[in-house]
Length: 97
Ligand SMILES: [Zn+2]
Image 1: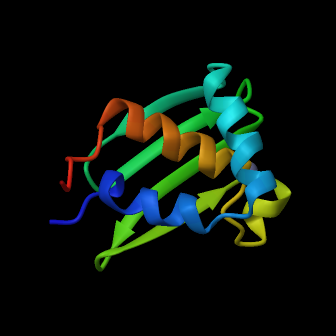
Image 2 (image 1 turned 30 degrees about the vertical axis):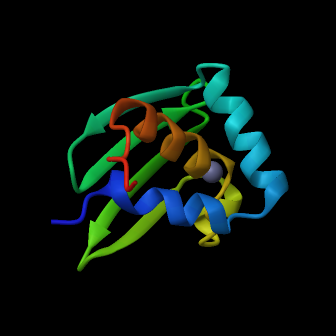
């Protein structure tokens, strides 16, 4: 079973650098509150609940949703990045080497 934690890495890598950096800052600042943490569903409130993020696995692929403007347009936004990093911190990827 492929989990959210296993799929986020490649998505974060594909994200535009500016978004990735801002998301990294948010996560480091402790702005992510994980609400639900299951293998196939991660939800979080980011930036004092300014944004609500859902990362899910559907048919083996990562799906995401965020309530901010970019997220509603379908982007993997800064809040998605921050949530992805928080997920990785909570469930470190198994080493491949
Ligand atoms: Zn967002």
